[in-house]
Image 1 (cartoon, one colour):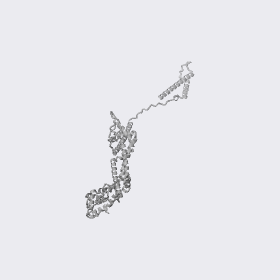
Image 2 (cartoon, helix red, strand yellow):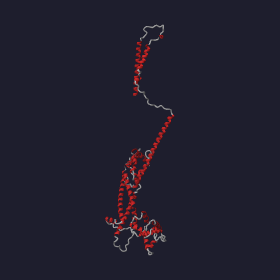
Image 3 (cartoon, rainbow, N blue to C red):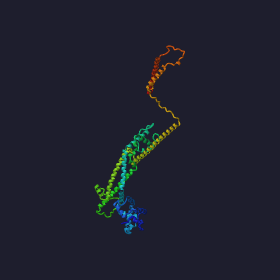
Image 4 (cartoon, rainbow, N blue to C red):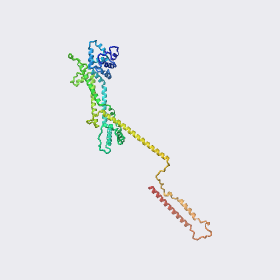
Length: 490
């Protein structure tokens, strides 16, 4: 068996660096790559011939596939190995590491195709998963945009506000029935009525006053935020490349199955030689589907081809579904005209840019409202402080309070007590009925008969005067009570 590339590169042979056939620079670079593989050249040839993905990684295969022999190098190496100077082993040992690898690959039928098939087999799982993820993301993003009620209502507000701006003032402009998706990118630049607030900020204000739930329309579009990184054309190209590589693997599997099946067939005609590195495989294109499936199941690479064909077919169906949904989404947004050539990445990028601009406008509006509240509070505090200072520095001012009327008095509350009145009348009666003192009359003046008034008559007159005073007082009290009642009623 041949030594490993690492062992050969570490040997002390003086001929190991002698380049016999290929370009020295290419030989040197190939030797560096091959030195990292802890595998003999015979083992490498078996791995490639059996398309065995368990022995090498995708990076290792990708590194050495560049140094597969070209037709010219193949021809030169064959001529060298067939020359009459020494035996094959001695000639092989005189080659550099890269040339030894090339000689090992020459012995493998369809080595270039099998090497590509091996790399495809190693990368297939990751490629199919990545493509499926992108396709499903595009499909789900289309559904989110189609089904978002909040986004539809928000676009309605944008259209309504735009019509109000365009038709304001003396103008003959008519109201628009729709707007283009690209115009969403200009909403944060256009000015509203006051030439200070942007159009998008005014839309945020309208939404806050009418339906705050629409402010969170982004919650309906979680997948759209990631879908703008997907390039649909690139996905289609990768899928088509995968289908092409899978077709090569299928033909290679059928060719190997046919070769094993016809191992006991008659030898070929004299002079016929098989080109070991030919991409022209002998495949019976007229075989039925059952025969093809039977042949593919007979080899390991064939079983892989059957499973891969099924997965790629399913992915192709999902691609067609996503493509149809995207077409209907363009129609939903009115971008399905003859001149519309918007792709997936462009549409989702516009929507995401609009979402970011909307959030920025929302933050600006919130900051402005908070600043306005702080200014109003500051102004109110300043006014209150100023008023307090004026009150402290000026004399107290009588406030014009509403006139309060005294409570209504009852006539009985102002009427004198009857006991007091009777006592006063009795006192006056006693005083007046008492005879005058002797000293009050002159001694020489005679008493005239008839001048004396009987006490009883005088008492009756006094009683009448008191009664008149009492009646007059009661009348006055009643008039005062009526006047107070009238004032309270008014």
